[in-house]
Image 1 (spheres, each protein chain N blue to C red):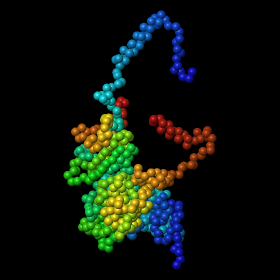
Image 2 (cartoon, chains in turn purple, yellow; image 1 turned 60 degrees about the vertical axis):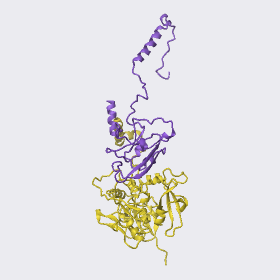
Image 3 (cartoon, each protein chain N blue to C red; image 1 turned 45 degrees about the vertical axis):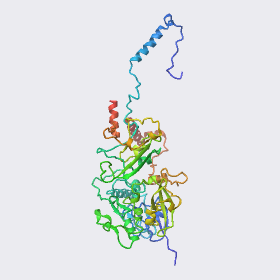
Image 4 (cartoon, rainbow over the protein chains, first blue to last red; image 1 turned 135 degrees about the vertical axis):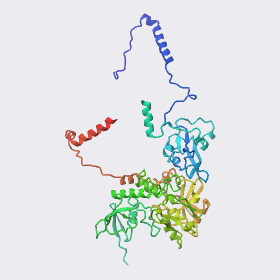
Length: 184
Length: 362
């Protein structure tokens, strides 16, 4: 015997009651009935969504700061870090009167992510020195049916100030706290 | 006349024979990049440059053959002449490495951390220097000095915030004109690079102050925010120019020439200055004869995703790094005893306790 889990099969003849198969049938029905009342592991996916944790990497977002100014300065570090070369950008200089729109003197006039190329590795998020780009933990990139829908520009990526993105844990320390709370 | 007597200098244990009057830095450069001290202000083609930034400090452990006493302090290798029989320690001396870390901190005191915005990022000497020798964080909490950016002429922009006062541009300006039009005003902490009352440097070679600037203090206005250095692809090109040598690097983004710079050598120095016509006005591929892609060091960010493997000359970056950070292994522990003896030794017990403490934590 290789393991202690194997069981000897009972090969004796069935009794009269067992020969009717009724006890077996009821036993099976009882199990079915039990599962009927048990909590269900499946969810109704598109309507219902599961919490994927604060570190899930989904839809990209270009964050704004507290005053609603774009954080991105088009430094290009995300693009150079991107292993799939999905990111491209065009920088522009902030002019007078735009101080409420952009945080630094340089900003991304165009910022595009090719979602056909993106592999959701999160290296752009890691490379960003301005905490501008993040991968949302609460939103998937939707299915597309047209190639024109695939290149995401600033209209899709920049954060909406009325519906700001917030993560349960931004830092390692936050994450540890969250972990403790969940395990408590 | 006799052939000039060569003098022997030993730098980091490697000997080199140089003519008298050579500086330690130049001697080290003759050996190679693995022993050459970094230089932020010294610029070989500019007479009188050097001695400002203290990045090239080295330890002289033996003054010369005749007077073998060591020099009491670290010396700036770019302005100290080599002597016969001199022994110099650069990367092998922890005191030098330590001092250099201090120099980085000093240079970064007033330097803004706006690398994401700065056009020089990626080819900035201060970035390289700080990356190799500095801390990842800053201890400086006070206010940094700030200035408004200033235009010197219509093509050059001065960001005084970023200036580290290396004086290279001043020497360049002195070299290209006979009048003094560009210099450093005020003293000490208040020093700032300036032209005489916002006057343009009115010279055909004024654009070279952009190339000599080790940081992003003087930048090309026509290139401002056009691209990042690592997204553009440098190629060697030349044209017949009646003012300068016409040998340049063209920086391509796609099919468009976004910038023209003079060619830099291994030490980041321009040997042949180029004129403003070449630099600012000739931005068509048709103006130039392309020679081929510029050789970029594999470790440089400029070579990221640019060329095939066969074009990039591989440097032994890993080996160099290992050599700089080499620590001798402690080999004093006896290893030929039998197991029983070893298990009874204090050394072994201490190790076991350490292990236990470490693993019980997990």
